[in-house]
View 1 (cartoon, rainbow, N blue to C red):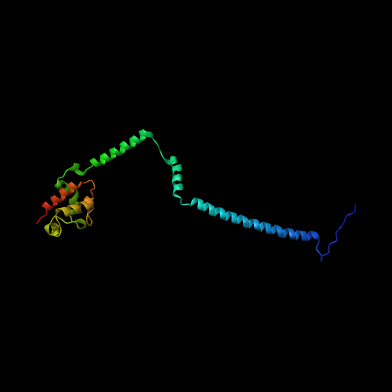
View 2: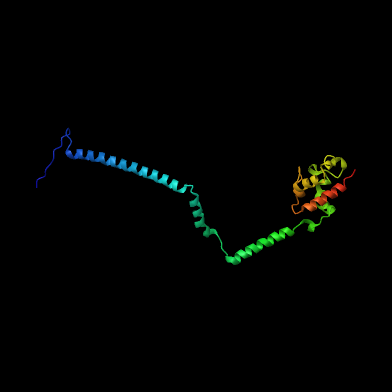
Length: 183
């Protein structure tokens, strides 16, 4: 068997070396092109995804909430609904019945239990039952003084901090205070 040996000349590269160079150039261009294509696909996919998620369509938001609601909602049937309504009514009734001092309009009792703490000592600028501290207030009239006691004024909270007092009870305590002002 005879072997053919191709003589290579260093000045003239063989055909296979030229083919290799051409192949590498084309292969490199294809790889770079595919990489650029992949980056573009990722970029466009990200933009499309953001547009779908942040579309701001209120109908989609409502539909999404409707689809999720059964997961966290509880339905106890009509019996459960009736029980919940009955409990709410009972609670509202109990709160309505919780009036301070059993609804008494005894101004002296209310003053002694609520108002006296500040008005006896003059705490936070509360006027004591001394005529000179009431000279600016008395001309305003009883209705204005009662309204100030109901709504609160200065450092005094509404109804003296007792939200369970009725307006009539507040009026009774103000009337009592006005009768007790010392000259």
